[in-house]
Structure formats: structure tokens, C-alpha cells
Image (tube, rainbow over all chains, first blue to last red; front, side, top):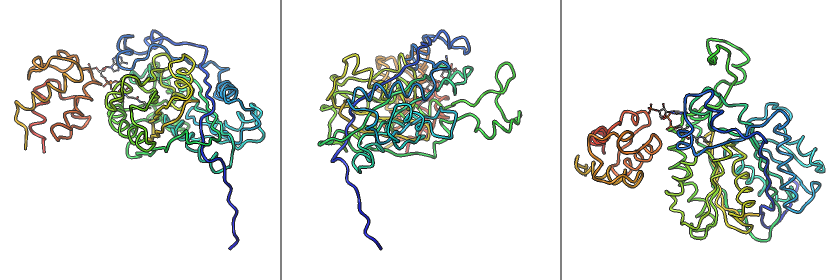
Length: 343
Length: 82
Ligand SMILES: CC(C)(COP(=O)(O)OP(=O)(O)OC[C@H]1O[C@@H](n2cnc3c(N)ncnc32)[C@H](O)[C@@H]1OP(=O)(O)O)[C@@H](O)C(=O)NCCC(=O)NCCS
């Protein structure tokens, strides 16, 4: 048996810069009301959503990612060639092979950075961040670009009252790099596959292709519906509000941070009611700034946390150096929570 | 020890007060959560979970939609509490 040399990276990792891209088209609730029987009042009171952004043909998963990443790289004060790995979390990139990360890494001008996609639904940002931290500390990359990007409008059934108003498009990115002090806490993460049915694609691609009309959902005009994301709203709401508050508390405990020490809370932007309820259950003090970006962004799955982070920093509601609790949760069901210092 | 009907109504009144801000004296057996007490479908989930903890019962999602009034919930808890 030969002795194998190991590599050592930085002592710790931190988020060095964040960037976001929101599609140009702003979609108010009135547009949603064209296809479902609902009201602006109902949508606002049950979800908090007033408007969301939907991507146009040019605003592809890659294009939005490149825009967000350019801003994150500039904010981090590094150049694209210094990036050693690109991790993209998405569930709405329709060309599965190759991974979209490689195109993004190339177009950004990285020097052959390692690049791959991951699928972890609305927990994707936390999963990517955890991988990035490991790479920086292990030394396989000095700087890692983590991107959460979705075009959920492509996977939305506009005739489904339970989801038509919920989803939006966008991209958020962060650069993770070396640090002498810990600025990303331990991740508390996991999966609950026994609840996999609660959020899922209506029809898997192979059954969609097989095209057995007796098995496929039809729209009001009798056409086969494209696969979309469907969910059991109440079950997910119950899980998110109560189980995820526990996970958030565990992440605080693991980082040795009390809610009094906390400056900012950035939960996945799934529903303002989930956010409000988590704030209550966690007994977060008044001084903690809470991200409610969902109001004008909708639920953008893997992109929601970096987008909300970028917005809070841009508006001055949060500032560089603030201590933030981030928690993502969604389809899987999967979750990931950690405490970070804002870039 | 199992809670009595009176204790359950009082407990539900506390919970509804905490979640929806409705005065406890308004929470009566014949009151509908959504129509009379300003508890919408999502607040109802919060009420149910709080009631589960307080009265040591399990109330599955499928049963929640049958609990229209405070009386329905009280009866459910009386029957199912451990
Ligand atoms: C989607 C969600 C807002 C729906 O709310 P809900 O209260 O569960 O909705 P329900 O389907 O139980 O319906 C409640 C009532 O509103 C009505 N309703 C449902 N959808 C409606 C709509 N779009 N507009 C108006 N009324 C609607 C229903 O008909 C029902 O009325 P009734 O009580 O008179 O029969 C909510 O379940 C939710 O946000 N869950 C969490 C989902 C989530 O965040 N998922 C992503 C995680 S990554």
C-alpha cells in the first residue's frame, strides 16, 4: 500500500461576494388571474406575493446565471480565472446533458474550472454552499462559484390554483473563498424521502414521452399539459413551519450563535406566511432583519436565498459583516441551514 | 390526564387568540374558524399543530378539513387525546 499525499486548503471559508439577476418582465397578480379563479387579495394574504419576474426567451438558465455570477465575482474582487469550481443548483434547466455549469464556467472566462449541476430543489443553495466550503478547506478550489438559478415559469401549470401564482424566475450567485476565521457555520441538512410525493413533477419525462393520453393531465382546451411542479400545499406548509424552525434552531446552536446575536434571517422565499410563522416559532428578536423578497420575486427555488441576500445588501437593510441565518427547504423533501457572515 | 371539554375550549381559545388575535371570549363551540374567527386555511394549520402539542393528539392533514367549528375540534380532541 502506497502512502497517499493529501492536500490542505484554507483554514476556513467565507462568502466573498453575491450577485443576482431578475428577469426584465414583471408579472403582477392580475396576469395570474387570467388563468385561475382567484383574487389579488387571496394571493397576497396566503402567500405575500404581489409580483414575480418571468424570463423571456433570451433570459435562459445560462444567461441569467452569467449575469448574476459576473456581479458576484466583481463584488468578491477576484477575476474569473481564479475560480476553481462552478456549482449550479437548478431543477429547471431542460438540457440535462451536459451540465449547464460547464457553459457558464466557459462563458465567464474561468480557466477550465471544475463545473457541475446539482439537484436539491429549494435547498440547493445551502447544498452548494456546503460543497463549496468543503472544496475551499480541502484545497480542491481556492474560489468556488455557487449559483442558484431557476426558470420555474417553464414548470408552472397556469391553470393550477395551488401553484400558478407561486413561482418566479431568476438567478443568484455567490463566490466562496478562503478565510482565516470561520464565516460559514456548520450545515444542518438532511432529506425526508418519505415525503417525496408532497412536491414533485406532475409527470416524469419518460411517461410524458410515452404519451399515453389516459395517463396524462389535459388542459381546459384538451391539450396534453407540459409537466409542471405540483404540491400538497398544507402538508408542505405544516412541515416548513414547524420542522424547519427546529432545523433553523439547530443551525444556530451548531454555530454557537443565539438569536440575540443574529442580524439577519434569510429563509427560502416560499411563502410569506411560512416566513412569518418561522420568525414567531424561533422567537427572533425585533432587531433581526427578515428577508421578505418573495413579495416581488415569488418562489424562485434555489435562487431565492442569494437573490434575497443581494437585495438586502443593495437596499442597505443588511450590511457586510452581518451575521445571517440561512435556511432552504423544499422538494425531496430536503433542507439545509447554516449561519454565515454576509459579504 | 385527559382534558375536559371545558379545558379544551379554553385551550383552543388561547391558541386562536395567540394566532389570530381574536378575544378568547369569542371562541365558542358554535363558532366557525374561517367564517367567525378570522382563522384562514393556513392559520388553521398553525392552530392544529398548537392543539396537537397542548392536548397530546395527532391531527392528520386529511382530518383538518373536517374541523370547521370550535365544536368539531373540541370533539375530535376529546375522542383522540392520549
Ligand atoms: C399554496 C398555498 C398558499 C395554498 O394555501 P392553502 O390554504 O393550503 O389552500 P387550500 O388548497 O387548502 O385552499 C384553501 C381555500 O382557498 C381556496 N383556494 C385555493 N387556491 C386558491 C386560489 N389560488 N385563489 C383563491 N382561492 C383559492 C380553496 O378553494 C379553499 O377554499 P374553501 O376552504 O372554501 O374550500 C399554501 O398551501 C402554501 O403556500 N403551502 C406551502 C407551499 C410551499 O411553500 N411550497 C414550496 C416549498 S419549496
